Length: 265
Image: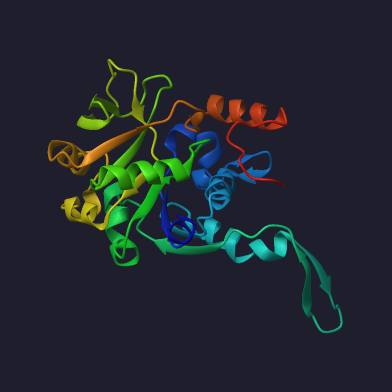
Protein backbone atom coordinates (compact mmCIF):
# COMPACT_ATOMS: atom_id res chain seq x y z
CA UNK A 1 0.00 0.00 0.00
CA UNK A 2 2.92 2.35 0.71
CA UNK A 3 3.66 3.56 -2.82
CA UNK A 4 -0.02 3.77 -3.82
CA UNK A 5 -1.02 5.84 -0.81
CA UNK A 6 2.04 8.08 -1.14
CA UNK A 7 0.92 9.01 -4.67
CA UNK A 8 -2.63 9.78 -3.58
CA UNK A 9 -3.94 13.35 -3.52
CA UNK A 10 -6.00 14.82 -0.69
CA UNK A 11 -8.51 17.62 -1.30
CA UNK A 12 -8.93 19.96 1.65
CA UNK A 13 -11.98 22.22 1.52
CA UNK A 14 -10.68 25.57 2.79
CA UNK A 15 -12.95 28.14 1.16
CA UNK A 16 -15.86 28.67 3.53
CA UNK A 17 -16.42 31.83 5.58
CA UNK A 18 -16.76 30.14 8.98
CA UNK A 19 -19.59 32.43 10.06
CA UNK A 20 -20.33 30.41 13.21
CA UNK A 21 -16.78 31.18 14.37
CA UNK A 22 -16.90 34.84 13.39
CA UNK A 23 -14.91 35.90 16.45
CA UNK A 24 -11.91 34.19 14.84
CA UNK A 25 -12.74 34.31 11.13
CA UNK A 26 -13.40 38.01 10.62
CA UNK A 27 -9.76 38.51 9.68
CA UNK A 28 -8.62 35.06 8.56
CA UNK A 29 -10.05 31.93 6.94
CA UNK A 30 -11.25 29.23 9.30
CA UNK A 31 -8.49 26.71 8.46
CA UNK A 32 -5.97 29.30 9.68
CA UNK A 33 -7.50 29.54 13.16
CA UNK A 34 -4.82 28.20 15.47
CA UNK A 35 -4.64 25.36 17.96
CA UNK A 36 -1.49 25.44 20.07
CA UNK A 37 -0.13 28.26 17.94
CA UNK A 38 -0.47 26.35 14.66
CA UNK A 39 -3.34 26.61 12.14
CA UNK A 40 -5.78 23.74 12.36
CA UNK A 41 -4.89 23.15 8.71
CA UNK A 42 -1.31 22.37 9.83
CA UNK A 43 -2.62 19.76 12.28
CA UNK A 44 -4.75 18.17 9.58
CA UNK A 45 -1.94 18.00 7.00
CA UNK A 46 0.42 16.50 9.56
CA UNK A 47 -2.06 13.71 10.21
CA UNK A 48 -2.07 12.78 6.52
CA UNK A 49 1.72 13.01 6.36
CA UNK A 50 1.92 10.48 9.20
CA UNK A 51 0.22 8.01 6.84
CA UNK A 52 2.66 8.79 4.01
CA UNK A 53 0.24 10.98 2.03
CA UNK A 54 2.21 13.97 0.81
CA UNK A 55 0.23 15.80 -1.89
CA UNK A 56 -2.57 18.18 -0.99
CA UNK A 57 -5.00 20.19 -3.09
CA UNK A 58 -6.45 23.12 -1.16
CA UNK A 59 -9.76 24.46 -2.46
CA UNK A 60 -9.49 28.12 -1.49
CA UNK A 61 -12.11 30.85 -1.33
CA UNK A 62 -12.61 33.28 1.55
CA UNK A 63 -9.41 35.27 2.26
CA UNK A 64 -7.41 32.85 0.13
CA UNK A 65 -4.38 35.16 0.14
CA UNK A 66 -3.75 34.42 3.82
CA UNK A 67 -3.44 30.68 3.19
CA UNK A 68 -1.25 31.34 0.14
CA UNK A 69 1.06 33.61 2.15
CA UNK A 70 1.35 31.00 4.90
CA UNK A 71 2.55 28.27 2.56
CA UNK A 72 4.72 30.56 0.41
CA UNK A 73 6.58 31.58 3.57
CA UNK A 74 6.36 28.19 5.31
CA UNK A 75 9.94 27.06 4.77
CA UNK A 76 11.39 30.34 5.99
CA UNK A 77 9.14 30.46 9.04
CA UNK A 78 9.80 26.82 9.99
CA UNK A 79 13.53 26.54 9.39
CA UNK A 80 16.75 27.68 11.00
CA UNK A 81 18.30 30.30 8.71
CA UNK A 82 21.50 32.17 8.08
CA UNK A 83 21.00 35.62 6.55
CA UNK A 84 23.90 37.46 4.94
CA UNK A 85 22.98 41.07 5.70
CA UNK A 86 25.45 42.34 3.11
CA UNK A 87 23.92 40.47 0.17
CA UNK A 88 20.47 39.48 1.45
CA UNK A 89 21.25 35.83 0.73
CA UNK A 90 19.32 33.38 2.91
CA UNK A 91 20.65 29.88 3.63
CA UNK A 92 18.52 27.18 5.22
CA UNK A 93 20.47 25.49 8.02
CA UNK A 94 17.77 23.05 9.05
CA UNK A 95 14.16 22.57 8.01
CA UNK A 96 12.09 21.59 11.03
CA UNK A 97 9.21 19.88 9.26
CA UNK A 98 8.12 19.53 5.65
CA UNK A 99 4.46 19.62 4.63
CA UNK A 100 4.93 17.83 1.31
CA UNK A 101 3.49 19.37 -1.87
CA UNK A 102 0.55 21.77 -1.61
CA UNK A 103 -1.55 22.96 -4.58
CA UNK A 104 -3.28 26.25 -3.77
CA UNK A 105 -6.32 26.67 -6.03
CA UNK A 106 -8.81 29.53 -5.90
CA UNK A 107 -12.26 27.97 -6.28
CA UNK A 108 -14.37 31.09 -5.71
CA UNK A 109 -15.48 32.85 -2.58
CA UNK A 110 -19.16 31.90 -2.95
CA UNK A 111 -18.69 28.41 -4.44
CA UNK A 112 -20.29 25.58 -2.48
CA UNK A 113 -18.55 22.37 -1.40
CA UNK A 114 -19.40 20.24 -4.43
CA UNK A 115 -18.67 23.14 -6.73
CA UNK A 116 -15.21 23.46 -5.24
CA UNK A 117 -14.51 19.79 -5.90
CA UNK A 118 -15.88 20.16 -9.41
CA UNK A 119 -13.39 22.96 -10.10
CA UNK A 120 -10.58 20.60 -9.07
CA UNK A 121 -11.69 17.78 -11.38
CA UNK A 122 -8.72 18.06 -13.74
CA UNK A 123 -6.31 17.73 -10.82
CA UNK A 124 -7.88 14.73 -9.06
CA UNK A 125 -9.53 12.73 -11.85
CA UNK A 126 -6.50 10.51 -12.40
CA UNK A 127 -7.26 8.04 -9.63
CA UNK A 128 -8.56 7.40 -6.12
CA UNK A 129 -8.35 10.52 -3.94
CA UNK A 130 -9.27 11.60 -0.43
CA UNK A 131 -11.21 14.66 0.68
CA UNK A 132 -12.02 16.30 3.97
CA UNK A 133 -12.93 19.62 5.53
CA UNK A 134 -10.23 22.06 6.60
CA UNK A 135 -11.70 22.70 10.04
CA UNK A 136 -11.63 19.47 12.04
CA UNK A 137 -9.25 16.88 13.45
CA UNK A 138 -9.50 13.16 14.18
CA UNK A 139 -7.36 10.11 14.81
CA UNK A 140 -8.80 8.21 11.84
CA UNK A 141 -6.47 5.40 10.71
CA UNK A 142 -6.11 6.37 7.05
CA UNK A 143 -4.52 3.07 6.05
CA UNK A 144 -7.51 1.16 7.41
CA UNK A 145 -9.89 3.67 5.79
CA UNK A 146 -8.30 3.12 2.39
CA UNK A 147 -8.25 -0.66 2.81
CA UNK A 148 -11.96 -0.55 3.62
CA UNK A 149 -12.65 1.57 0.53
CA UNK A 150 -10.73 -0.72 -1.79
CA UNK A 151 -12.36 -3.84 -0.35
CA UNK A 152 -15.96 -2.75 -1.07
CA UNK A 153 -15.26 -1.49 -4.60
CA UNK A 154 -17.85 1.32 -4.59
CA UNK A 155 -17.32 4.90 -5.74
CA UNK A 156 -17.34 6.62 -2.36
CA UNK A 157 -16.57 6.11 1.32
CA UNK A 158 -17.55 8.52 4.07
CA UNK A 159 -16.15 8.26 7.58
CA UNK A 160 -19.00 7.95 10.06
CA UNK A 161 -18.47 9.28 13.59
CA UNK A 162 -20.63 9.51 16.69
CA UNK A 163 -20.45 12.88 18.45
CA UNK A 164 -23.52 14.98 19.21
CA UNK A 165 -25.88 14.83 16.24
CA UNK A 166 -25.31 18.19 14.56
CA UNK A 167 -24.23 17.06 11.10
CA UNK A 168 -25.19 14.81 8.20
CA UNK A 169 -27.11 11.77 9.34
CA UNK A 170 -26.28 8.41 7.79
CA UNK A 171 -28.84 5.60 7.58
CA UNK A 172 -26.94 2.35 7.07
CA UNK A 173 -27.54 -1.28 6.19
CA UNK A 174 -24.41 -2.91 7.55
CA UNK A 175 -21.66 -0.74 6.07
CA UNK A 176 -23.69 0.34 3.02
CA UNK A 177 -25.21 3.82 3.21
CA UNK A 178 -28.95 3.68 2.40
CA UNK A 179 -29.64 7.36 2.90
CA UNK A 180 -27.53 10.49 3.39
CA UNK A 181 -29.26 13.49 5.02
CA UNK A 182 -27.36 16.61 6.00
CA UNK A 183 -27.89 18.09 9.48
CA UNK A 184 -30.77 15.88 10.55
CA UNK A 185 -30.99 14.08 13.90
CA UNK A 186 -29.83 10.52 13.35
CA UNK A 187 -31.63 7.69 15.10
CA UNK A 188 -28.41 5.65 14.92
CA UNK A 189 -26.21 8.50 16.15
CA UNK A 190 -23.79 8.25 13.21
CA UNK A 191 -22.94 11.47 11.38
CA UNK A 192 -20.82 12.62 8.46
CA UNK A 193 -17.30 13.09 9.83
CA UNK A 194 -15.66 13.92 6.51
CA UNK A 195 -12.48 11.96 5.70
CA UNK A 196 -13.90 10.75 2.40
CA UNK A 197 -12.29 8.42 -0.14
CA UNK A 198 -13.54 8.91 -3.71
CA UNK A 199 -13.10 7.31 -7.09
CA UNK A 200 -13.07 9.69 -10.08
CA UNK A 201 -16.60 8.52 -10.96
CA UNK A 202 -17.88 10.65 -8.07
CA UNK A 203 -17.12 13.71 -10.20
CA UNK A 204 -19.96 12.68 -12.54
CA UNK A 205 -22.42 13.33 -9.69
CA UNK A 206 -21.51 17.03 -9.50
CA UNK A 207 -24.16 18.37 -11.85
CA UNK A 208 -24.90 21.92 -10.70
CA UNK A 209 -21.59 23.71 -11.13
CA UNK A 210 -20.58 26.11 -8.35
CA UNK A 211 -24.00 25.69 -6.72
CA UNK A 212 -23.43 21.99 -6.03
CA UNK A 213 -23.53 21.08 -2.35
CA UNK A 214 -21.47 17.92 -2.00
CA UNK A 215 -23.48 16.84 1.05
CA UNK A 216 -26.76 17.32 -0.83
CA UNK A 217 -27.76 15.78 -4.15
CA UNK A 218 -24.41 14.12 -4.99
CA UNK A 219 -24.27 12.16 -1.73
CA UNK A 220 -27.97 11.40 -1.85
CA UNK A 221 -27.65 10.01 -5.38
CA UNK A 222 -24.54 8.01 -4.52
CA UNK A 223 -26.42 6.47 -1.60
CA UNK A 224 -29.49 5.75 -3.77
CA UNK A 225 -27.26 4.08 -6.36
CA UNK A 226 -25.63 1.87 -3.74
CA UNK A 227 -22.28 3.58 -4.33
CA UNK A 228 -21.70 5.11 -0.88
CA UNK A 229 -20.22 3.12 1.99
CA UNK A 230 -19.49 4.16 5.58
CA UNK A 231 -16.27 3.53 7.45
CA UNK A 232 -17.21 3.55 11.13
CA UNK A 233 -14.73 5.47 13.24
CA UNK A 234 -15.16 5.01 16.98
CA UNK A 235 -12.14 7.07 17.95
CA UNK A 236 -11.62 10.79 18.42
CA UNK A 237 -13.19 13.34 16.07
CA UNK A 238 -13.83 17.02 16.65
CA UNK A 239 -14.79 19.85 14.33
CA UNK A 240 -14.09 23.50 15.14
CA UNK A 241 -17.38 25.27 14.48
CA UNK A 242 -17.60 27.50 17.55
CA UNK A 243 -15.42 29.21 20.15
CA UNK A 244 -16.39 26.42 22.52
CA UNK A 245 -15.00 23.86 20.07
CA UNK A 246 -11.76 25.81 19.71
CA UNK A 247 -11.40 26.11 23.47
CA UNK A 248 -11.81 22.35 23.83
CA UNK A 249 -9.14 21.68 21.20
CA UNK A 250 -6.78 24.18 22.85
CA UNK A 251 -7.25 22.45 26.20
CA UNK A 252 -6.57 19.04 24.67
CA UNK A 253 -3.41 20.34 22.97
CA UNK A 254 -2.21 21.96 26.22
CA UNK A 255 -2.65 18.64 28.02
CA UNK A 256 0.35 17.32 26.11
CA UNK A 257 -1.59 14.35 24.74
CA UNK A 258 -4.00 15.66 22.10
CA UNK A 259 -5.86 12.58 20.84
CA UNK A 260 -5.58 13.52 17.15
CA UNK A 261 -1.77 13.94 17.19
CA UNK A 262 -0.39 10.94 15.31
CA UNK A 263 2.96 12.41 14.28
CA UNK A 264 6.20 12.89 16.20
CA UNK A 265 7.59 16.37 16.87
